[in-house]
Amino acid sequence: GKSKRIALQPSVPATAETTPVRRYGDAADDPAILLPSPRVPQPLILGTDKREGLAVYTLTGEQIQMLPVGRLNNVDILNDSSFGGRNDTIAAASNRSRNSISIFSTGPGDVTHISDIPTSLTEVYGLCTYSSPSGAYVFINDKDGRYQQYRLGWRENRVTGSLVREFRLPSQPEGCVTDERRGRLYMGEEAVGIWEAGAEPDGDAPVLIISTGDVLTADVEGMGLYQRETSADSPARQLLVVSSQGSDSYVIYDLADGNRPLAHFSIAADLENRIDGVSETDGLAVTAAPLPGFPLGLLVVQDGRNRMPDQPQNFKLVDWRSIEPLLGSGAGASP
Figure 1 (cartoon, helix red, strand yellow):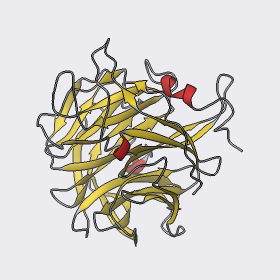
Figure 2 (cartoon, helix red, strand yellow):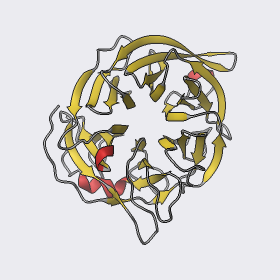
Figure 3 (cartoon, rainbow, N blue to C red):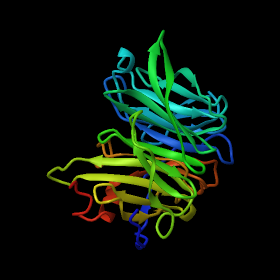
Figure 4 (tube, one colour):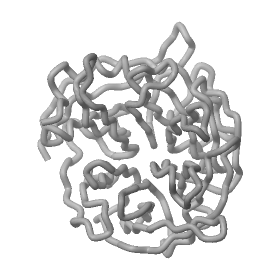
């Protein structure tokens, strides 16, 4: 991919943080942003705890639920509200206790664990979802580099999965995200870079598009898509946001301009509000949807070292309005 050195942009502050997870050590990992819908009255953040299960937070960071279902690693929302004829929004998570895909219903009322889909992987790790006219899918990977794609079904109030595709990256992957508008899958190979493939079961094979180096520092961890249409107030954006864990920073790539690195920034402490900076981020999630207090959208990142005061790990919330000035006015527009 095109890679050139760009200056480290000014840091941005986190505007809120979640309740810490219960245990010290490497525990919190990956968030997902649940947008409001007729069955989900308020936006929520789902966060995995590799030692306990799935936590549910409000946008102020308050934890309102914990589902102790096992060692969950990555979580994603399935953007197909009609799945199974139910109108529930479904979330999926990689469960390292069972080498399975744990499925959750997010409405109405509480988040509930409804079923587990077994996989044939031996050490599940990263996960992301994909929805298209051909079906609803989950991509899940193994530490040995294998990727599997499962098509989801519905039977007797349980979500089922059938394996429709398998391929391999050369070494350990984790984070992934799908572009449902264009049918693309982006995957991080932790030590090497970012791969792109077709997201349909018969999609094209993975190709390495961005390598670690001057801008992106291994490990390549969390990945999210910030997609916004042109409006009177702002240009269109088609952006890939990636956690550059080795440099405690984040890189934003312009997918509409040959995957050009558009910004490189860190998240610094907000001393006035006693929110510490962010380091060693694993997973992240981002949305361009306007949310209460976040009119241009929201970035949520895992914080590997939670300070002020020292506490177990948590997730930090960043207002996209503080990131937007780093991107420039003309760049990022769709061709």
